[in-house]
Amino acid sequence: MSERDELAEIIRAIDGPATLGGLEVADGLLAAGYRKPRTITTVEELDALKPDAVVRSFMEVIYERTFSFRTPNKPYWQSPGNELPTASS
Image (cartoon, rainbow, N blue to C red; front, top):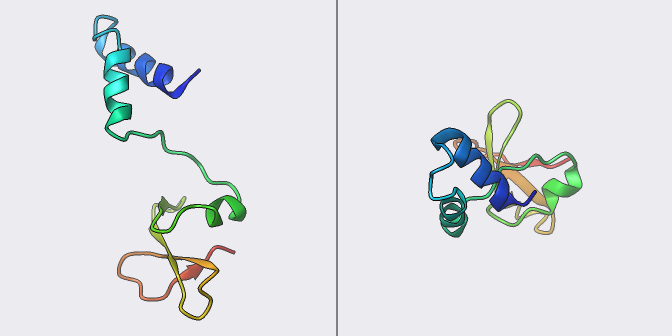
């Protein structure tokens, strides 16, 4: 099932089948930038995220991908208010 179809199914379940068919609303949400959250399960997936990516840990802490000046090729993660970045592994 495509992301569009999955989103339309959720819309129909909440608002009923008459909601613009659900697909039009799903198209609008996708065009506006909606993306289904995904779960990162490996360090490699975490390190492959783009600079400035934001993740939420299982403990509900938010981290932003950043780099250390000492090791510019290795991604680090920093939470708001914390001056010390954390390495992925």
